[in-house]
Image 1 (spheres, helix red, strand yellow):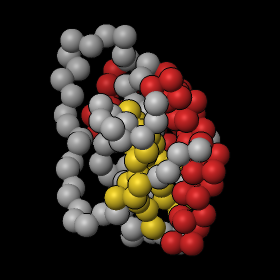
Image 2 (cartoon, rainbow, N blue to C red):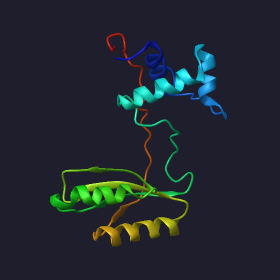
Image 3 (cartoon, rainbow, N blue to C red):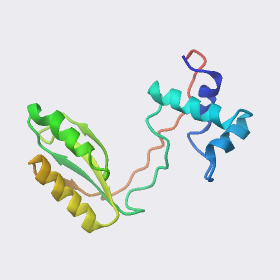
Image 4 (cartoon, helix red, strand yellow):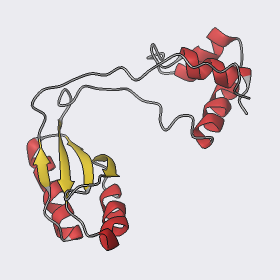
Length: 153
């Protein structure tokens, strides 16, 4: 299922991903493979859903502003509304919860005025009021971990 290169990428680059104009070439040099090998391996493990993205984790409100938001949507409208919300580039992700407020999402913008505009537009396009839950206290949970890939592929 996974090649040795894919296993190495999953284990060795959850932290300390090269911050350079050529990060994949840098990884390739460290692993003694080609940049194309690295790019193809990442594409394959993404398609296999072992990863969902490669990118920095920036603490909330360090660059721009953000808020957790929620809306109450009838079950019959949930898929449509979630799709509409996903169309906004400012929406980081959304997810369903079993609650009166059943659709939750994170909105990120350059500034407070833009954040307000995005939320107003979401309300207009979906037809539902958006409740905001701004960050009061930040917690950081490091979700990286060493994978035991001996039995994978």
